[in-house]
Length: 250
Image (cartoon, rainbow, N blue to C red; front, side, top):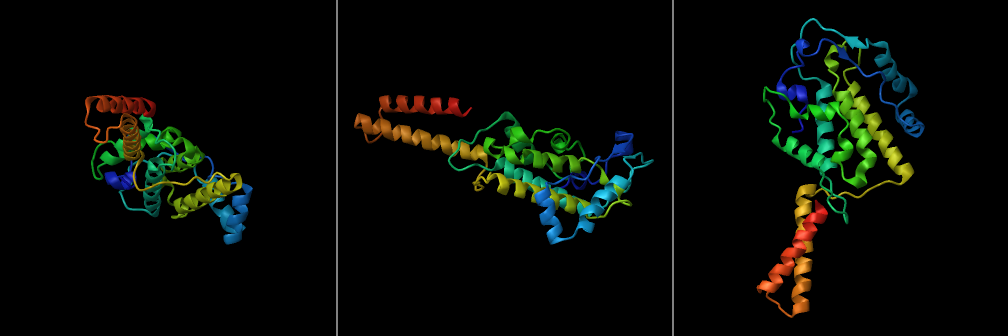
């Protein structure tokens, strides 16, 4: 599930699938604070070089034939992007309800069912073409939805057709800048959110329901003086409690 789309299919998009290819208008921008941090670590010449290279390149490419497939450095970064997306979308926030949305459930199933090497349509295409990340993330993690969207839109471009004009590691540079930018934003706005990564939100919801059920069942047995929980009255009350929890969670 973490493999780049072109690597998964073993080919670049055929030219007859899209008459022309359009690159992004600009290299992803960062805040002034993030830029200062970047220049402090590297230098301004490097910072400007990637921006200028993209803006000086052709905006539209109309290749006459599909280039033969080869593994490129940007594919490693796209794989990292999918890993990051899965980790963030699956992440549960301690003390909060799992908050399962239809979009998150579909994303979870799409990534789980992805079969590298399948010659057909890659179902992950929707996530690089449309901004669906906000609905896939936990409500407490909305601050990184736009970050995932920026990265996704970048990997929607078939950059192989710009290979002669751009540095082979331009995707590494994009990821570095976007991650730095959002780290700085989180620090400045004090929006750091603790994450629970041992299980995805779907499994976390099952555990959450079970804890609510056990708590309700224990309270019922304590109030009725029954310690076994096997009588019909106790079962009915506990089942009703579990149903109400399910409705809240849905």
